[in-house]
Length: 228
Image 1 (cartoon, rainbow, N blue to C red):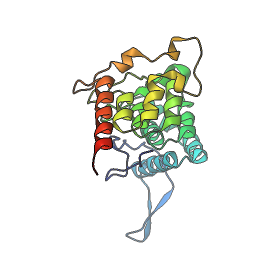
Image 2: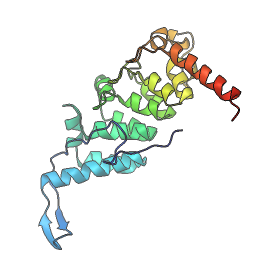
Image 3: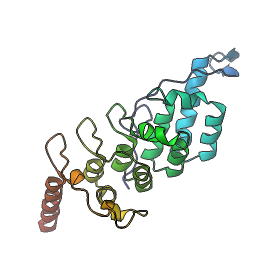
C-alpha cells in the first residue's frame, strides 16, 4: 500500500478544513497567558473536530462513538452539506479504517447513506475516490457494498478505479472493475462480470483503461529490456 502523506494542514490531499461546529464548552486554559478563560463555542468546536479527525485516522471507534454521542450537532451538520462527519469519513477512508467508516455511515438512515458517502470534497472526490487512490481495499469493498457511486468523477474526470490504477493500486482497481474479485459478491448477477461502462470511462485527458493498461505493458517491457 502506498504510504499516506499529509498536506501542510495535516489532512490527506484534497480534503478541506471543515467549518467547526458551534458548541458550548467547559473552562479552557490559556497556556500563553497562564490564566483560565472561558472557551468560546467556536474554540470548543475546533477542538471537537480535531479530536474526531484524529480518532478517525487511528481507528479509535470508541472515541468516535463518544464524540458523536456527546455532540449530536455533528450529525445534524452533515445533513446540510460538507461537515466534520464528512471530514472524518474521508480521513478514515484514506487510512483504511473500515470500522470507523461503517460507524459513521450507521449514523444515517438507509435513505440518507448514499448522499452522505457520495458527497465530494474540494477536488470533487468522494470517499470512494480517497480510499481507492490510497489502496484502502477494505474501505473500497465496504463503500461499494452500500452503494457508493463507482462512476463518480473528480475534477480531472477520474473515476475511483482510475485513481487506483494510476496510483499503482492494481488490486483495488480490479475490485472496482470486477465484482468477482470482492469478498462478498453475489453469484448469477450482472455484478459477476466486468462492467464495461467503468472500463470505457474516460479521464480528463481522454484516456480509458485500455490506454492505461497499454502504457503499463509498454513501461514493463521497457524495464525488462533495460540494461540497468
